[in-house]
Length: 152
Image (tube, rainbow, N blue to C red; front, top):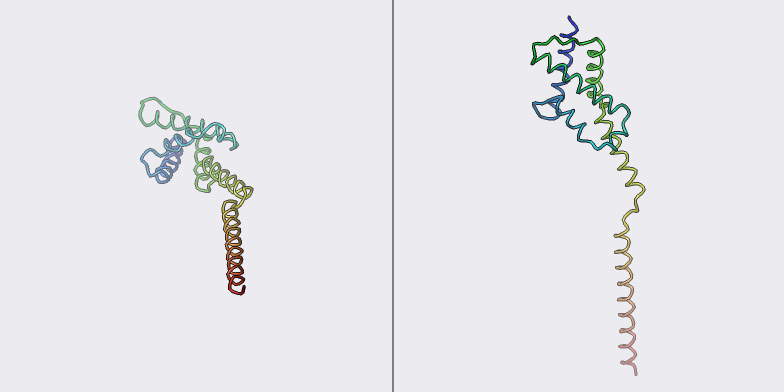
């Protein structure tokens, strides 16, 4: 099998996976657009984010040139290996977007662990308890007043 055939076969697998993930007919383009929409500060959290994004854009461009132009496009063995490895990373949930989602979930868990718990409920229950105590004391005072009035 030629390098070109091998690359196209592997690219189609990745494109099909992305189409299924995004429920879209754009495939790899949807994945790239999703990466581009992530704020720079968030993308810096994931090692290799920028390299992966630029490599996907480059390989999609080469594939599109191969599919739509009459120019000869040379795919290297490293192009085939990279696209295959990226496909595996997406399947395993080790791709940039999956890693970012995992990081965001973890940071949300940390935030919720460190956040004060149920302060509003505590305040409401303390207020209720205080009001009940006052009502009970007032009721007892009225009862004592009533009993004393009857006796004297």
